[in-house]
Length: 179
Image (tube, rainbow, N blue to C red; front, side, top):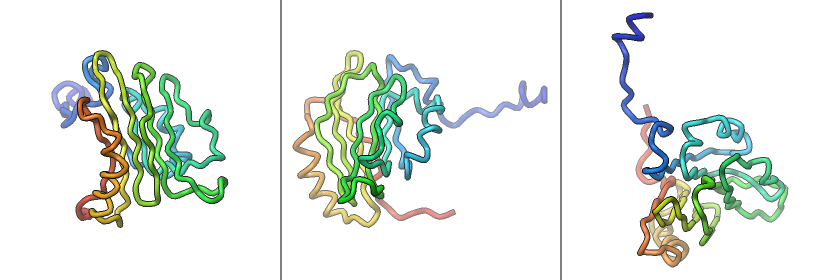
C-alpha cells in the first residue's frame, strides 16, 4: 500500500471540474439525465458537478405536477423547460433543466420544446463576462434538415452575436459506437 500511495500513483487524464478556479473560468456541464426525478438526489451530492456555473440536463421528464422546490439546489437558480403534454399529470419523454449558480445573473430569452428538439437560451453575466448559454437536445431520429430549420427559426433570432456563446447539449450526430 505504501508503494501504491507514494511511487505508483496514476495521473488523471483530465482535470476534475471542481479543481478549476471558478473566478477565472466559467464552467459548464451537460448530461442527458433520462428521468431527472429519479436522479435529483445524486446530483445534489455530486461536488464536481455542483462546481459548475451552468448545469444543463436534457430528458428531465419533469411535468407540471412536479414542484420546482423539490428540484431546487442551494446556491443555484433553476430554469425548467418542460415538454407540455395534453395531460398535466403524465410524464413526457423530454424536457430540460438548467441550473445556474447564484453568482451568475440570468435573463431567460427563449425556451422551445417538442418531442424532437429542446432549446433553452439564457443571457448571463458572470464576473466581468457577458455571454449567452444555449442548452440543446436533438432526438436521434430527427433529420439534419429539420434541425437546421428549427435552429434557424427558434435559436438564431435569440442569439446576440456581440456576446460570446456557450453551447452545451446532445445533438445525436454520428453513428453510435458499440464496444
